[in-house]
Length: 301
Image 1 (cartoon, rainbow, N blue to C red):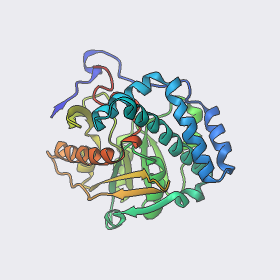
Image 2: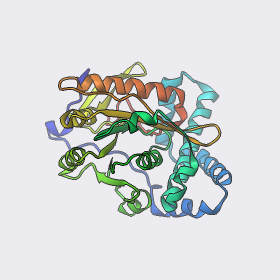
Image 3: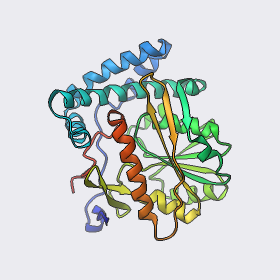
Image 4: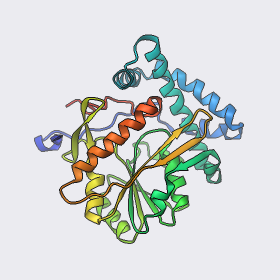
């Protein structure tokens, strides 16, 4: 494996994730307004609207189509169908997330089985939970926090449109959101782990700095952040992978995998294992991996 050289190391500005003009609070209000619909009708409406999204998001459509072609080998009309399904399933998950954020008591109503929850519950002390942008990861974080007696600190990127924060990231019910860009974030997370609490991170998006490591993903090297493993090693706590996907019956299934112990010098080995787990989950649910960019070259280096 190799590390990705930081753009800042050569005087270039740090890379930024893409943004699009549709990420606006007005859209969140429209989605929240559908909360009075029966859930099957609401999700079907969201799915149909999502199927229209590729027409107004051509760059994201191209990135998703390329990713699916690598992951599934699909071509032609089958590839077009899978691409449309990514946007449709994202819209359903987004609808559930926005509605649940306004009505927190309904979070568990959308959930089916939690497979492997004993892996999390048997961890008596602090734990780092690692997930990815698969299915409804933010909804799952709230559910896992309800199953745990520990407060859970969820590390997130700061929304460029700050008005969106209140729609998705309200502290409460055992969950506290922590901005990744905050200058003292590392100290905050270490302090939480030393108190025996939980830290939840996402491990499928490179950060564009020296903490990114190239790991094979569907046969091609892609950058992934090693930071979660460095945090777990520094705090001497286990790292527990977890995923949340939407089933054919439109219930969410949460899978908690075996903990990954991390020791000094083996952080990149742990990262390799994590990426292998991620690849298996994504192969099972390719239309629920919601990364709308080129995963193998996210910053155009």
